[in-house]
Amino acid sequence: MKRQFYRRLLALSTAVLLGLSSLFPSIAGATEITAEEPAVTDTVDPAASTDTSNPASADTVETADGETTEETTEPERLEPDAYFEPIQSNDTADWPQGSAVWAESAVVMDLDSGAFLYSKNMDDTKYPASITKILTTLIAIEHSRPSEKVTFSENAVYGIEQGSSNIGIRLGENLTMEDCLYGMMLESANEVCVAVAEHISGSVDAFVELMNQKAASLGCTNTHFTNPNGLPDENHYTTAHDMALIAQAAYNNATFRKVCQTTTYCIGTTNKCGEKRWLSNHHKMLPDRDYTYEGCTGGKTGFTQAALNTLVTYAERNGRRLVCVSLRTNGRQIYTDTTSLLDYGFNNFQNYSIFNRKTWADAKMLYPSLYFGQPETVANLRPTCTVTLPAGMDLSSVETTCNPGDGTLCRSYTYNQYPVGCESIPDTAIQALLHSEPTNICKKSGSAAASDLGNSAKETASGIFQKILAFVAPVGTVITSFVTSVFTAVPWYYFALGGALFLIIIMEIVLAMKKKKKRKKKKPAKKKNVK
Image 1 (spheres, rainbow, N blue to C red):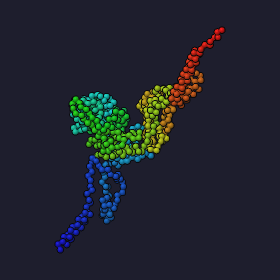
Image 2: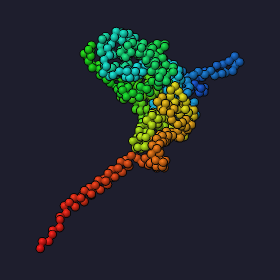
Image 3: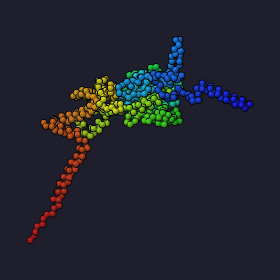
Image 4: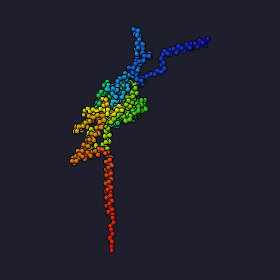
């Protein structure tokens, strides 16, 4: 009897426990999500209809009239409000659609064409934090030599915000400028920025003025700096658009490219420190890092409580070079979003060359007639020009417009009224144009605009050559047209081979004549018969 009682009691307890477990959700699979490294979830569409069959997403409420209505509640999401803000580049007709990102402001820019492939609130002012050091480093490279000694003042060592990024430099310590470049870009050392500013300009204020002048010269219109390191200041701000322009100018400098993609660097012993200092790049998309990205060639990280996470990332693939700028993102999602944006830029666009200085230089080597051109013409001084178009498009879809600027002549290329490239003719070329015959370079578009330069250059060279020959003889026009066409159409090595062959023929003739003379001299005289 006791055994049956215990069995019934055990069965009843089991039934009660099973009933209670169905009333409470299981928490065995719950995970903690930190603010620093939020989990990546599927995109939530706030406009999507709620499933009323799920009691967690809809509540039934009885009204005073006895009717029932459903009160819906949005599911909890990880994405910030900025994730759902519009992406301006997506509004362009026939333009590849970019994905949403956590950043409040972001761009992807082609470094060769200058085209902004992705733009989200790119003209909104934000705090840049330590990506400010990109401009500081560029100015330091342009105004100093790597071997110069930088001495750290009391203001440099003790004047920075307590607890901010530093590499422990001591008062009166000397570093080379090269060491300083790596200290700023790899370890984001704030005291190094101050010391560099004082070394180059004499004071931080004078250096900051130089920074703002440089930013303005690069085309930045919504940027103002108050310090060289990016520490918080309400008057220290920039935009994703302006930061991309600064990043582009910096990346065009070979020394900067070398520094920004270096993963580790060693500062040797100094006058104040007998130990080596090893620096490590903070960018986590470089090789062998947490968010390694194929083709990443460096960049700069930034963070303050006011700015949140900021990031500039360079990448190269298949001959194309991109930069991604992301401002005000909370946590490491900034790396995930940057990966997505760079993939978008590489996978959906291609570059076309409007004019290539290297090709032009090769042409001058191949065709001797081009040497007769004027030393300063649009063709000779024109920089390399590239446009970026959606994959599958060609130059026939590009429109060209010319606009005079301050001392320059600007040529813009657009696709469905969206800028895809531009170029500026320098002052020296404009002066040359003022003393030459007018051209129609501003009236062409598409593929015609891409080919008119080479033709005009050859015409200029031929014109000079024609004038010379026309002065020599009345029949100069006929001779000139023939000679010019030959010089323009035939590569230089044909002339070299022809000249060598001509010399060989002359030498053979000369040798043959010498041999003939020698034979005559050696011919024996006829003996006379003596009787």
